[in-house]
Length: 83
Picture (cartoon, rainbow, N blue to C red):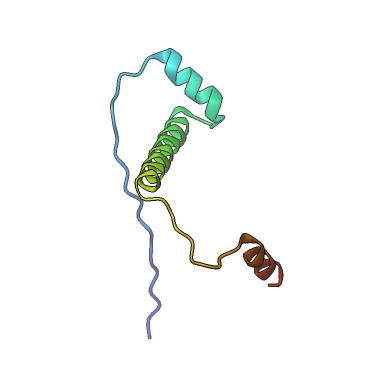
């Protein structure tokens, strides 16, 4: 039997973009990351996450969630606390 080492290869893309210094400085300040790359990754990921939340909210607004008959939040909380 041989030992196999699995390496996870992260894919990334090098991008050249013209972004105003004032915007980059604000992103760096708000994200509190070590460098511009990490700051931009954080800001972009948060933007993507917010878009997903907006899409979910829009979907729920069009077709609201329906709970099963007899569902009660109290019984679920009690069940979770019992674990």
